[in-house]
Length: 555
Image (cartoon, rainbow, N blue to C red; front, side, top):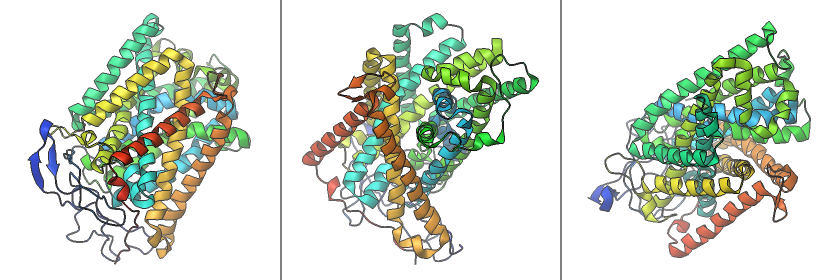
């Protein structure tokens, strides 16, 4: 290995020894996956020992200093080697929900920055790539399904780690119902059932059924989920490619029905619309890219867990960039800025209108793309929330019952159904308040995303701080890059909080306690997290006896 290349690290040592099965089929083990980071042999990049990474162990460790778990907790083992790199890539892409994300942000984005929407999507890619790199290198040190929770705990301490884990769990709660609702709505439109799509009670009932079905698939088995996701990602991307190609063709052929404008290279300039517009646009871009890290939440179930999930996360962001740029160019060129800005409040419904404009009687192609995108993401968004709760329970940050794993299928059960139940209740309550309140909850989601992404970037630099001066590679990839990504996200977070304090900037345009609804929702969830953390600490302080550590220097 060259001197400026970030050092390889081996996964957690597999030291667990089996113990009798606990009630419900959960296997209890004496050792915890997630104990320590092994250095590599000097100058070679090969893991120490025989050079083969050891598989993650299924349960808890004995007390140890410097960022290691403090106490064992009953937990079964997630099924190892259930999926491969391509499966993880498909899950990372589907968790982002490209078609739905584009449909949701393209109108508001164009309203902010005009023809420079593709440039803002390109600029939003930068912090995502930097944070994806941090996820990759932290996963090589600690391939734990809890990702941010586990890594931030090791680097910054248990309180910060708990809050990061809570933020991930709440993103699932906030968005699962909305995704399922979009999948139902666009699915009904795709088959011509427009009347049912406009029936609130029917749509709500079908949404709840869909959430339950996707959760059942998650519990059924990771391989089943992966096969389902592979089909959906191919179908989704194919539909988007067809739509973009037809739109661009009609622009150059002069057969479009809207105010078409030919694409230009300066559309890639994110600064063309000015600073304030860029801030709002970047926040929308961050939301559009969010979700790729679901690939890393499956790290304990993926072949080559130390490397494949991280590479899948990075490649997910690259594929998303290409997809977003192609579709953004096509949409802006075909529809023009005035039409899209006028549809900003319609959010994802703008794609339903564009489908008819671009494809005519073949509009079901784009409707199907959005439906499959939201359907796939409904399932994959459950994954990070449930596995984060599982990881927290293994470290005793949550009650041990959340760590229950089906002994036959190797999937988390309690944590998955907990996420499902909470997300369903949230969806029904918010949906009954208003459609705008549902949109406001999605806006609040962006604050949680920026928070835990930023924490992960900081944790990467802090965890690897002893290695940053070993060359330009470690300095940039382990320190400067993640910190830059975190700084950009913190800036967006602060700007967004200031913006959301004004009720007029919310979808509902109504004040909740004198503030915008999205900010109130985010503050409520943050406050609930702090209260629950304090209650858990009072009930069991074992997790809070952990101390932050640092990656050991390679010999």
